[in-house]
Length: 261
Image (tube, rainbow, N blue to C red; front, side, top):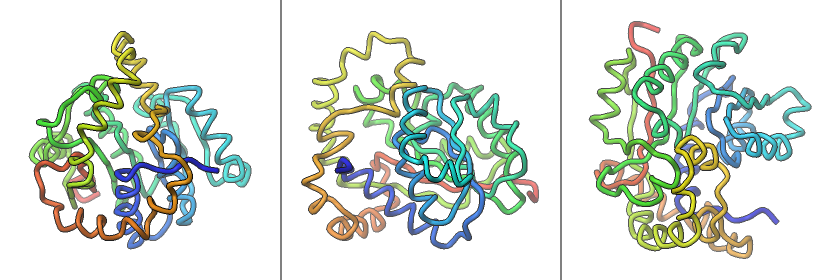
């Protein structure tokens, strides 16, 4: 059976599904798809597109999981750096989407990421990003995953302004569920992944998309009856009601290039 998803991941996907429901399916480019949870949601919603990841094993896993979509020419998976290879895509896209990617980029790479995305988007296209929030919550998982920063809403707004974008929508996600679970999460990460601190930052970044920590990155499939969209619905309403919470551990944003694009 497919491994169960963590509560935070389920809540993020529920919010993303709601937002995508108002957008006609088109062509996407996804950066850092990891295990492919967002890729799966996009394909199920009628989208087609390209996915970029740096890590060979992650790319192999995606090609196995989505072999039918690849054979049907609905998905292409690239082992490449989006910033340096994204411009090679033929034609414009309607959506650039990334989840837990931008925090791995230094300031110059972050600006280049925004610039490459802007060049690919159609005039009415948009970027969707999910990034770690609440700098006060910095912990061992940030170090393990090779993060360089956690974001705030003012920081996202400043990034958009200096790179020629405008924010359309922001929301804090997974609050307060992830905050309540954070001590257990940090304990699990310390116990199972502390040895990764000895790796170079780039290697930690590459491995961040295929982490395997039981009760952290995945749950036993037997718990799918407890952890699913139906049982998590009240917590989804709660996260939406607390969308402005500064302590939210995940920030969701939508943006478009400024200047009449």
